[in-house]
Length: 209
Image 1 (cartoon, helix red, strand yellow):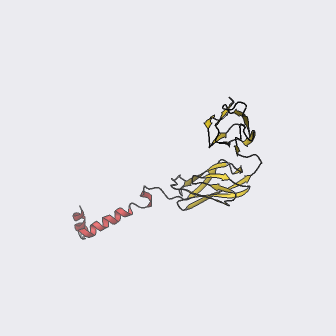
Image 2 (cartoon, one colour):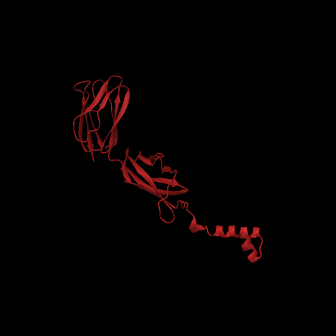
Image 3 (cartoon, one colour):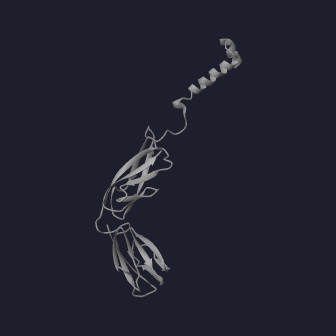
């Protein structure tokens, strides 16, 4: 076929092959590619932009091409400024450190997006610790925000933490020594607990909105 075409137009076979390659290349232009388009925009989304000291909130990067279609972001780099107000890990989990305003930035494919956050402090923590000096829980009653965490510090002496049968109570903590065990309280209410190892050793967690 190439030889017949070359003879018809009076050109050599080598030149004919070069022309056909050039025509083929032109036919595979911008409209014929099958690979994904590069990232054009990065949107930083979250469930809350105002949260309290001690609270952690997940942020997510949504990446799109120039046509507005979703694109796989690949590796996303997270940062926050100022770091005295909040911190962020490699997965986009932002933790409030102190009151103020901060900017959360996600970068993917050389493109960045931001979200502004405000950190407040109502005086009721999201994280607190219960100690066990002797055969007592201290403090006896702790108050935290819904979704907050209580850390139970177990000493060398054996204790357990058994919650009353109340809807929303977390799982019991079996007998431990020299350990820190955390429980998350997602439901508003009052959650009494006791140490079965030492009868009369009781405490309670109060969870507020």
